[in-house]
Amino acid sequence: MTWAASSLWKTVAYATSGLSSCYCGLRFVCSLGKCEDVSMEPTIQDGDFVLICPFYVNFVLLQKGDIVFCKSPKNPRTIICKRLVAMEGDTVFNNDKGYEEYVGKGHVWLEGDNKEASIDSRLFGALPYGLLISKVTIRLWPLNRFGFLNFPSTKQRRSTS
Image 1 (tube, one colour):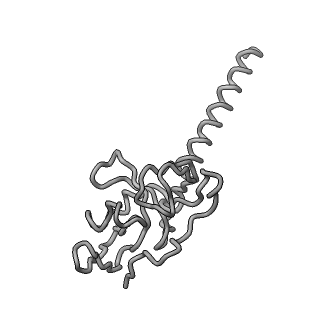
Image 2: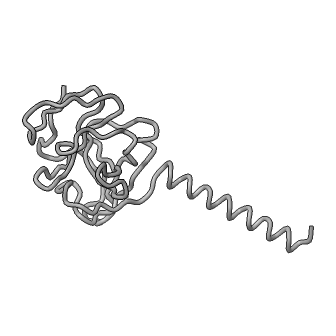
Image 3: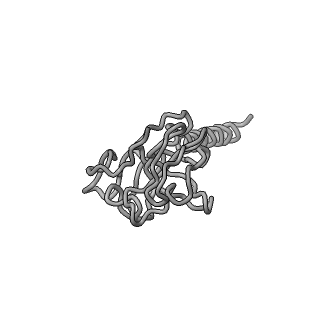
């Protein structure tokens, strides 16, 4: 093999390796997400950029209170951002319907922090775990609100049993 062909082969190999590593990192470890809804205010504002980590979903490491990105059950092409309120086996009181609902096996209950502006599990019920995409871990932008995302400052989460 000539020097030029050898050099070309190495360049292609390194580029392929680098692109594969980037894809795996973004797909399975972390990537950038943008929240485009008011349903998570005041915790996350419309237009905030966040670091999302699919790792937590892939290895079933989510906990109640985590904020997640998931596919909308009404339109799978739409991504929604909500707080995980209950997991399989939990019971949640649905104020909109006036009774308790059981979260079945393989499902989660998601709600927005801004109850008045959120279309969530109170309307469409528990979601299959398979619709979850990633956990939201850090707000990156705007810089004046940079940091880890925690529970809302006021007690807005539903109690579960």
